[in-house]
Length: 403
Image (cartoon, rainbow, N blue to C red; front, side, top):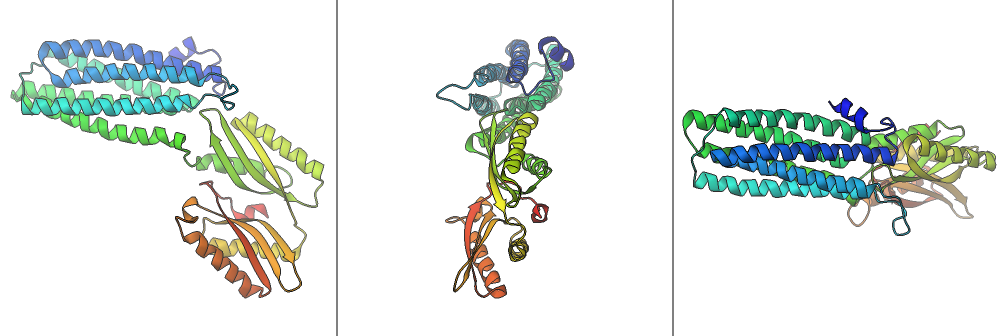
C-alpha cells in the first residue's frame, strides 16, 4: 500500500533532497492521516456513544486529535517549503520542527483529558455494553493504526522528518491504547465489572502521557540547538581527510535551519609548504562536493601547518598523546612555536566538551594546568599559551589521522 501511494502521488520519488519532492511526501502522509483518523473517529465515537463506553469514546477523541495533528503537520510542511526571503535568508524549514512540537503537545493534552475522564469513570462507573460491533470496530482500528505507524515511519525515514517520526510514534501508541480498550471491553463483557473500562482508560492515558513527554523532548531538541549527529560528523571528517593535501580537520560546527537546510563550517589543516592556489582549489572542491553529496552549505577556513619542523612535530605529538591520556575527549590543534630570548611560547588550541568550560566545569582548567606542567617538565624554557574552546559535541578525529 505504501509503495503504491508513493508511486501514485509522488513525482520523482527518489529525489528526496529536492524541497518540492520532500514537501510532496509530507503532504501525502498528512492527507492520509487526516482521512484515516476521521474515519476511525466516526466509527469509534458512534460505537462508544451507543454502548456507553468511555474508553472507546476517549479513543475516538484521540483519533480526532490525530486528524488535527495531521492538519498542523500539513501546515508545517507547506510553510517549511517556502523559499528564503529577506527576513529569513536560511529559509523556513524550521516550521516543520514547530509542527512536530505542536503535535507532541497535542498528544500530552489528549493524554491529560483521557486521564481525567478515566478517573471519573473509576469513581462513578456506568453500565458498559460490549458486543461484536464494538470488537470489530476496535480490531479494524488496530490494523489501520498499525499500517499508519509503519507508513509514517517509512516516509519519515525517506525524507528525514522529525514531525513524521513523532506521528509514527503516536500511531504506534494508538495501537497499544486501542488494544487495551479492546481487552477491557472483553473483560467487562465477561465479568460484568464496569470499573474495568475506567481502569483501561487510565492505563492508556498514562501510556500516552509518558510517550508525549518523550516526543516533546525529541522535537524540541533541534529548536534548542542539539549536538549534531556523531555519524554525520564522522562522515564529514572521513570524506574531508580523503582529499589530497588535507592533514586534519577541527572546529567543525553544524547549524540546523530545518530538514535539508544545514550549514557547516570547519578548519582544514594543510601543509604551509604547499602551493596556496592548489590548496585553495582543494578547499573549493570540498565545499562543492559536500553540498552535492550531503546537502550541506559549507564554509572552510584554511589552516597552514608547518610540517617540516622536527621540534614542532615532536611537540605536537607530545601534546596530543598527553591530552589523550588526561582526557580522551580533548583535541589539540593550531600549534605555533614562538621562540624568545628567555623562553619559548607554545601556542595552541585545546577543544573539550562544552560542560568542561568555565564557569560550569573545572575539568577544562585542570587539563590546561596539566598540559602546561607536562610541557614545562619536558622543556623547562617552554611556556604554553592555551586557548580552551568547545568542540560543540562534535566527534573528534583520531589525532594520528592528521599526521
